[in-house]
Image (cartoon, rainbow, N blue to C red; front, side, top):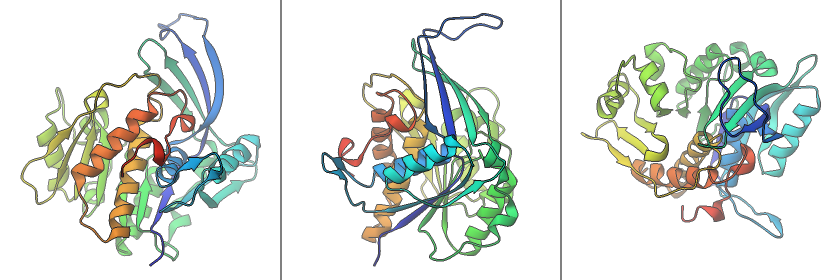
Length: 320
């Protein structure tokens, strides 16, 4: 049996990052404390997380991984796009499925990080990411991946098409619906894994006021999702599963937060790697263990600055 394959289909962006002591108010101008550029996009971040968390890196360089990771997406024919592909390749991600679009710009994300709290604000210009269209995904080409990971930074109608053809091919799908966009109810029926934060959970479940985690998770289970995870930031994550009467919360320990930009994507990547391990070992998938390990990986990420720069390697998160 070969290594399990995770395919991430999603966005690739160049991050333009400004750090400030506090967020400016409307109409206010502040002097930033630093400026940098980096690699990002939720799709690319999650691909890097999958690749790094399935292998170690030491002084001799990149070590063989226990999972193959493939990225499918689009970049522009520009320096930003070339930089993104080079970075993914260095982390062990297969980028042969990333299209380079002539006459298109690579996606860009403007990130403002508040140093007081480590929280961020992000404004995305999709550019080449918007060229991924439903007709590009009439079918899933073999060999089939063990898991497809999706977000909503590419056109939502494309995501819906991919979910449809994945279900037809009996391929497990992990959907991270960020940024949150209302989706048809039938999309959730048969969806293997749904990971979202509290804000997204409230919007997509149409819950007003304070979020009741148990009832919100149950809403998604009732319309066909098999495993639901709601991330809670510093409080950890809530999880629930079909066929199990009650969900639970896995907390996190004390963490020194520097930058939360890649926390969610690191969580998704770690969770996906745990699924791959279960498939590789032919073992029963343990949702609580997957959430716990993903919490640990995300905790390591928030202790560093940047998006992909902050994503840990396997040896920083042992054991899996």
